[in-house]
Structure formats: structure tokens, C-alpha cells
Length: 365
Image (tube, rainbow, N blue to C red; front, side):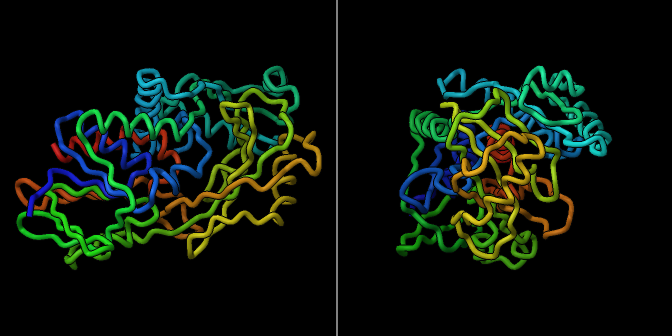
């Protein structure tokens, strides 16, 4: 049986970014995707925001990956004509009691080199967004929005131009590690071998790693928890030109306003810990959304929100604990083989994707 150079499981943004970076360094890559199209799970169900890097503990992988990945992503978008816009964001304190938290977040962002952050008083914030209600805000000028589907298509094209392959409808069900290679057993019984294996399977990485024929490796696998986030869309044009975020809350960044490149608006995500994958949006959440949004936009009219879509974030810390960091597991199997697996790649995973791809290319060599 032929032994392939490098196989990546998962054709979301992260898997494609890894394949892109590895193909640039001379590796022959094959990306396996269980669905019939690329990027149909977490990569297609998020806010499509290029984050600045405010929220994450200084020197954490999230902070480094977000700040460096942001620059890499803007550069990639320019080079490959991926639609995007550096639109800027306001993070708002909705009452004076939140101002110490706002100042602390600004200090955190500055420590992370998030880029050009400014504290705004009420007058300054309202001069930028007259319909806003707040006691103060942080302006983040380097935050942007992106067409994530076009990003994935650009990555796909770049990979294929380097003779990489993306194979759809190819579900891996088991992994066997031997002295010479990693063997993947597919759902249809087909087997293939690879020297280097990278698991970028999002919600499924922990369960897939659980099939490995190594008890030592299994003991190192973190549990992946599912957090569902629903979005509602606005039926009419909103009077905002920047993204509007409340201060972050437990397990998420709060129900925020994001704009898309066509000028449409969506609100979300909320936080719902779930056991099984389910993308249905509960219309009964609408009133909770109205209440949350009106804290910073009191002019939101009733009967204007419609259920949009939902995404699921993979977390590696349980409910009620502080947010976890990204985890990049890697193991040297022999002199020529490496196993790499990504865990907990939630927000800012899109922004961080090219940086994490670079990390993988350095691990593989």
C-alpha cells in the first residue's frame, strides 16, 4: 500500500489553512472531508468576523494566534481577492458599573497588541454611532468582516494549484498507528496510509482520536463539549456602520451585532450547552434577544428579528469554568511521522487559522 505524505482530516477553514501552509512548504497534501462540500459545520456557522485580539490572556495561544493570524488573513485576502472589509468594532459598557471591566478589557487588548484600541466616552461613542446607548466604549479599528465561503474557496484553489487534493464524502471512522505510518479506515472500508496525520475535524476531533489504537494517546485526549449559539437576523437596515459588541460574558462574547458585506445585520450568538449536534434555532428565544440587544440599541423595533442560523463551538472546558485556550496536540511517531490534532478551536478560530496552519507546518517540518 502506498504511503501518502500528509493527510488532513477536516476541510473547514482550519484544515484548509493547514493544507495551504503545508503545500507552500513542499508537502503533498490530501484533505479528507466527510461531507459533500467543504466547510459546512463550524466554518459556515459563525459571525464571519476578523478579530483584533482583545479578549484572550496575554501570551496564550489564542492571543498570539489571533493577533498574528489577523495580519496574515488580511494579507491573504488582498493577495487572493477574498471579499472583506476592515470595518471596526465598538465594545460597549451599557452602564457605569461596567466601566472598570471595560478599562480592564482595553488593558488586556493593549497587552496583546490588538492594535490601535481607543477608550471612548459617551459623546465620542455617539459621534460614531448615534443610535447607540452606552456609558463608554472601546473602539477597535483593526476588526473586520469576511466572506468565509470565498475564503475557503480561495484556500481550496491555492491547495490544488500545489497539486494537493481535497476528497469529499470521505469519512474516517478509525485510526491505527504502526511503526511506519498512520492508517485510516474509512466508512466504506477503504484504507489509506500516511506519514503525517493532522486532525482538524472540529466537533469530531476528540471522538476520532478516541478510535486510535494507543491507550497512551487516548489518555491525553481532552473532552470536547458542545456550545450552541443561535443567531437572529434583522429584516430592515440597521443604523450602524461598525460591529457592536457588549462586554463579554461567560462562555461567549455576548449577543452582538455583526454586519455582512452586503449590509445585512445579524445578532448573536447566545450560549446553550448541548449534548448532541442540533442546528435548529428556537423562535422562542426571540424575546431574550430583544432584551439583550436593547441594552445597547434601545431603538430596536419589535417584530423585526427573524430566526437565522445556529453554530456549535467546540470547547475543552466544562460549563462554569473559565474559557480554555486552543490546544494543539502533537506527537512524534517515528523519525518520519507526526500526529497533530486540534482541540477547542472556537472563536477566534477563523482569524487564527493561517497562524495555526503555520504552527503545523513548523511541527511537520
